[in-house]
Length: 171
Image (cartoon, rainbow, N blue to C red):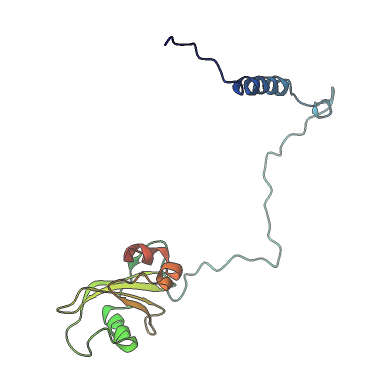
């Protein structure tokens, strides 16, 4: 079977022609006559010194003093909660809101609380059991238990937890 030379397809030729014609038409564009400088006219020059901008009286800058109490943590990543809340507060919240932990016995904080926004993630260990992942939210003195267990990617965590908590929990 002899080889035939390749030819452009029937659709490619009109498309290429249209592109070339459009480029030729647009290439002739220039500054319209009404926008060209007039002979003998002066072209305005920018001012050399910028003028100071003043705010209207109703606007004022916020005070530069730091806030009296630390706000929530960043939400995109988790950071150490710096003891607010501590592991003992997480354990107390889990015992208060669920029956997943024994009332007495040893509970160890395997991973200290990490925070994102007002949410916390912690891993606890109970002897003879798998590690227990815990997600809480709220202020350290009044923690709300969101979920605790081995699979904590609940609807609430997936939809409402800050990205840092979801990523750390593997959701």
